[in-house]
Image (cartoon, rainbow, N blue to C red; front, side, top):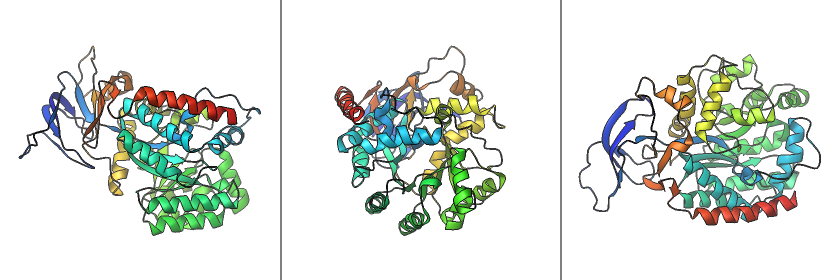
Length: 419
């Protein structure tokens, strides 16, 4: 158990400020207590939080850990002229080059980056076609070592041929036999009907949802209309995917009114990723007409949910009716998604402790002004995940950062030589 003394707790839902000591229960989905629980254990670790702010840790609703070694990589031999070519000449080249050691390094460096930015839970969408079987366990084990919660999926697609599609289905089924997870799908334009049917059956068998890219680029919709005579959301709905309870559809930039209504009538969540969309020049998300269930992710661009939320605010206000509370609610909606679908590892005992020495008063009434215009991930001093202190004074308590980064540089060089 951890004892946080003299801190100021900010309720992640109401934004109410409470000056209080806090006792933090260890374990998956543990509790926090504002009065000392009975039968306190003897081995209590104490953290003096005088002048610090304690609040719920962040969670990432859509990440691509497999892209962690891409920073600074060589430019592709053919310069992409559109988003589809960016996939073909950059990301589909990179994911096919990954092997076991690269996947592990990618997961560890992502875990480091996430922890240092206040994120204790990652929902990830993975792809490594040349090393499919067992790849999700490599990521899960690395995140476990780093003390982070996770909900993983393997990207099922037909773009690499029938054998690889079967392997991706097999990897998904094998992983879900032992761990919580989702059924991953690439965008509609790379997944045929038969593979979709097999993926749906897996989701139904394991009572889980799908984690799929949706209408990130207009090409996805154009392909769907040309080949299937319908738009992407309608295709998923007709196949039965929207009847599942735990779906995450990602991006959702190019949606029409009917598709928005279909999503509203389901329990599906949208994970939106403004930084990635700006980088790929595919458009800007517009949530008008979508009543609820919008979350924020990073799409592999980075692991900083502070940055993701701030980009969502500063960019989104030019494209839909927003205010800071709406964007903050989207940042925090991932907690609701995980709780509603009984996924473990994102309990109240996941906390970030902020060293935010503001030059102006901060309180419940103006917290959002501070969050969007003053705070950053650089203010994260400590991180508690599942009741364990995994980041202390900005240093990871479970991983040797120097070794992790040295190894990742080696793996990045190996990867780049293969591109």
